[in-house]
Length: 242
Image 1 (cartoon, rainbow, N blue to C red):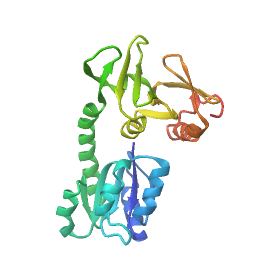
Image 2 (image 1 turned 45 degrees about the horizontal axis):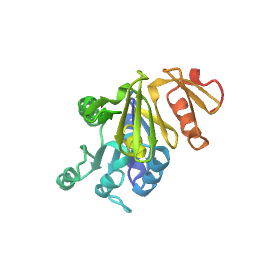
Image 3 (image 1 turned 180 degrees about the vertical axis):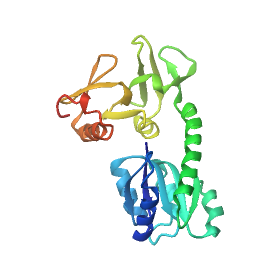
Image 4 (image 1 turned 90 degrees about the vertical axis):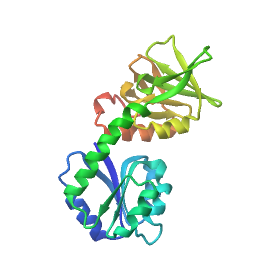
């Protein structure tokens, strides 16, 4: 499923856009906004989306400026405009696609197919990270899809995989890893990320992973975990309220 937001200062344009994409089974518009600043506050609170559809001519912050402003909170940015003269400037700002108004379903579908192909190519590349095995001087590429838990201590993070005898480390902030790999990991403690796919049970203040170990969920991150359970329809894992 692709999760997206739409930003346009015209409610009529937003309404028409939603009607055009209503029948898309793989696209969910989770929110719409009439300004970039409002969208920014939402993304800061609710987290990253796959796509931002954004009008270029906006009264508060332009769509061109929104590319950089919202960059940490999306995978792809699709600019929308009724004018051709913005196309060069938009691609110079590194937008991923450009849609002309009035937006039509067929055009959106073409862009989504293109982005899915790019996403698949990026998928294999970006889920690898340079790490060191503890006690070894040489760096190696670790497939983060093998990782169950990431913990932090000072300026270092530690990657736990299925084999309990192997521990990998890297000098990077946990916050950066969380932002970059939010589709792989969810934070349950200020010093702990766990692999989403490794969660097998959730109880009061705890998560159990596929390595049969339990990890504490701090109060700060319990609401985020509840949303994860609800959004991914994994209530069968939820034994008690987290």
